[in-house]
Every structure is written in C-alpha cells, then in structure tokens.
Amino acid sequence: MAAAQGHFSDHPDHSVGASGASGADPSDSTEGREGDGVPRPFRLAVEALRTARPRPGVEVDPTRPPRKLAPYAYALEAVVVDADGEDGEGGQGEEGQELADGRLILLHDPAGHDAWQGTFRLVTLVRAELEPEMAADPLLPEVCWSWLTGALEARGLAYGEPSGTVTRAGSHYFGGLAERRPATQIEIRASWTPQPGRDGVPDTAGHLAAWCDLLCQTGGVPPVSAEPSGPAVVTLPQRRGPHPR
Image (tube, rainbow, N blue to C red):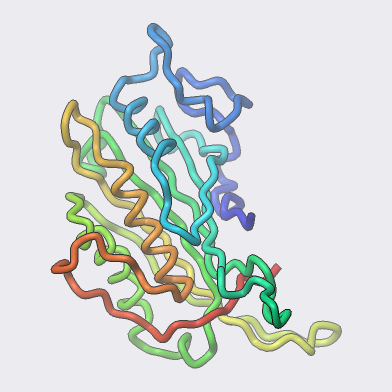
C-alpha cells in the first residue's frame, strides 16, 4: 500500500495520546479499558472507524498516528485500487493499479480546542496523479475542494470549521529519466470538525465513508452518493492514472 504517512513526518512519535503506549499496534492502541484514562467518546469514535466497511475498491488500514496534534489521535491510510486494471483473460492492464492514496487522522481533545470549535477534529491528506490537460484546468482547485464538501454534504454529515489547501505540482524528467512522461500530482490537505451526536460522539463511520468518496473522486472513480437528492458534485473526466512508484 502506498502510504501517505511520510507527509506527517513532523510528528514522528507513534503514541495515541496521553494514555497510549508508544510502539503499540495501531489497531489495538486505542482500545480503552476501564481505568486506562482514554475518554469514552474517543474510544467509541475509534471503534466506529475500526468496524466500518469501506466502499469497494478502497483498501483501508490503521497506521501510526502523529503526536502533539492532540492528546488523543487515531489514523488510517487508504488507497483506491483500479479493479479494471487487473489482468483479465486478454492479459491487459496491471493488477492493482493505485489511483489515489491518503491518510485520515481523528484527533480528540477532551478540553476542547478554540480553533476546532469542538473536541474532535478530522485531518486528511489525499493525493493522486492527473493527466496534464486536467492539471491545466484553472478551476481545478475549486473543483477538488468541492469534492470534499460535496462528499460530506451528500451523506448528510454535520461539520464545521473546514479549512485546507489544494496543491498541484508538475514534474518533468531529464537525463536518465528522460523517457518518463511529465507527471502532475494533485494534493488535498484539509481538516474539519465533525459535529457530535449521541453521547458527544461524532458519526466517524459516516465521515470515513465520505472520505472514501473523496479518495475515489480524486482518483477518477465516480462517487457513490448516499443521498440521491444530495448536492451535485463537480466532476472531471474519468481517468486511470496510477500513483507512480
């Protein structure tokens, strides 16, 4: 799996928070026990993430969360895999082409955070390769941002304080790499505050589903709307540009 965790290298410690054990398995590190000090809302939010089933074509795994962003953190990484790229009877395509990858981090501060306007925060990085003609579209940043907000709204999720950046970067190759065609990468960095529901716990499973829709949209796979009457999401032409290795 192509992990995006390198983009968070400013926070290399793997602790899950004030009570977490550094170096513990990320899939088990937030399973609070009675008296372990891990807040119940955070445990429930993480459990919802762990038991959620992503949409087909998206492979999700737990990964080491960063420290210092919040007292408690849990992280997932994911890739969108091109099922059409698998070798068929005709022997065409490459099996398991990765169209997009990313990382989603759940942060929790029981004392609240002024910038978040809440006690939970979701942080993400999503990236994918684009065809040069798509990268040249002057509306690309606005379109990509609409994929995030549209995915959240299409699933009826309440959220606040969204912020982020959309970056496109082009690469041209020379010398021994001159045979490679120019490549352009789109990168979405964003964060938002999921609004709490019962017991002060946000619908993290729903936000994960919306995030998977964002990943797929960025990778050129049409989103699956949970609400047929939901807001329209601006699309770019479908593509099958795998993430370079």
